[in-house]
Length: 249
Image 1 (cartoon, one colour):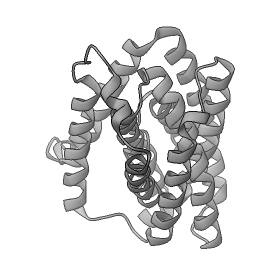
Image 2: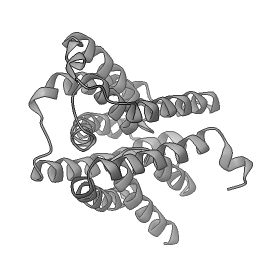
Image 3: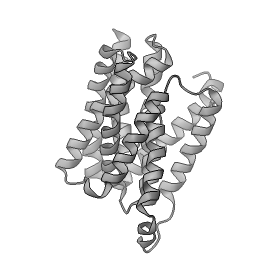
Image 4: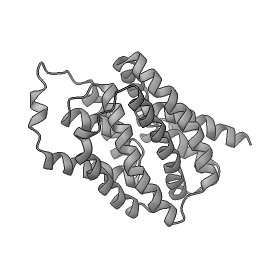
């Protein structure tokens, strides 16, 4: 029962982090593994929570009129295709060397989020649609395969190809992740890799966290989003580079 309570609370924290930034799965996957799930099953079960969390987030961002879907339909479709392929290939989490690569990616994400804005944003519009599709095929593939840190990766990528502030970028990210996660859940479900009672309990926590996260993002603006992103990236990198293990945490 204590582990169930911890799983729910981890879901609340993850839903909040994922809606404002990303990296929430670094909290929930260890708890699922602590409950006795193999990493591949934990990776699949976590997607149920991700799906419901992003349904809640998308609904809330739409209510606050922060979500624009039409300009991102092509990259959403690309991400869905990439995620389906990634989900089929996802058999197990990559070994420790992959953690180091992911840590480098997250640091790059933080740099891109905080890089100085140019006076004009016109250069962003020079990226052709076909290149955006290729980029989001890759991001979607990563999301379907691993998911950990994909929210931060989405924010950095959206920041590169579209003229969104951080609040609207978060809204678009939540919408795209919702769309491709639906198909990822189908793949994992038909493969028999989802433990549904764990996934649904975690989903309840994630949805509550997402509800709170959208409210904070809209009311507090980009400033609070940057703070959460920074904390999420630093915690994720410390875990990925083994700092917690060295400190025996």
